Length: 460
Picture 1 (tube, rainbow, N blue to C red):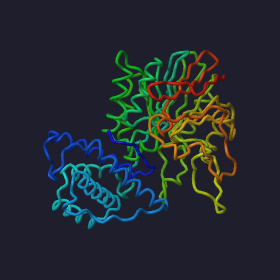
Picture 2 (tube, rainbow, N blue to C red):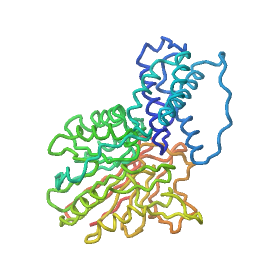
Picture 3 (cartoon, rainbow, N blue to C red):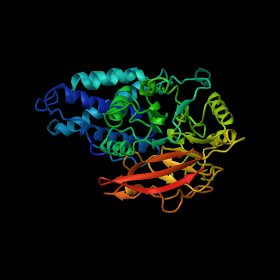
Picture 4 (cartoon, one colour):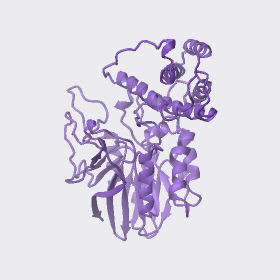
């Protein structure tokens, strides 16, 4: 595993990180650890090469948002082409190549291929990046996802047992030790089903969906029985065009529990509760800057959700990857005066339409890598962010420091914040326990091999 795990809200950079991770695995599989590659470096790249790629991705991301550009380094000399130096050279080449492919710059692509042929990078670099071209559309942007329309899904709901225990995890699909640790705690709670609130990193490729999601789920949750598992569409799941995600949901559960689309409804057998999962990952895109994206629901999907709420006599809980509002992470661009709204206006309109006739009990989301348990805001009684599933966040990031330029700032409930361990915020998940007309929500964190309860509540 790499020394750290860093991810960026950028389709091309996420694809690049996915490609480099795949290259590292191929290089390591290619020969014995004692055998040297064409570059003369020992093949043990899985633990180091993703960190090199993350450094490059971080540099490019900071440039894209107007951050301070790092001081340019001169290229390494022949004497500097150690294992680390060569990894840097090949990773830099890989980024330039993928960027040229995305911009459809045929001249640059040809020059980079010539550079590769004359160089000493492992052949896996070129073969892998060539394969990744299939994830890009004709315009060089992410390929359109094979989104399933509401008319295809129809009024289908998936029945879950009455008085079920449901585990919720957000931004969990890293495959890294923190994710495995969280899943083991989830397994120890013996839930009836698990719902992932989205994001399989880095870009939701088929290989990542297998290694970072299906493999650990099967190894830890399904040793005795095929526990139902569902997954929402996050932005990272769509960065490769959703290829891995849509294959994933087909195979996660056998009929009649199969997830029909990127949105779905889990309804209790006693008709007391339903979990309504929305697809906010499809439109997390912006031609100028992904950071300025304001995601939304497809109109026919929104109508589908309204139908599920209006036809149901019980209580509804909403699920999504993206947040309705945030006090800590910007949503969309600032206005001319530099002010921002804490609310996603498009999702707010969708929420108001869904709740025109009936309210909802709560809305759980992820996206921000934190646990945020909000006081009532924007007409929502219980907004809950559960993005603390696996991605490490340094205390330097001050995730609980409110944004300074919000028009109105949503606040958190007292004594509901994550703790820290070793300079990093703790990871965790939530457990919902239904009991006829009531639901108990427990919010957990894990650190140093110990799970603790951060907060719990009951609602009806």
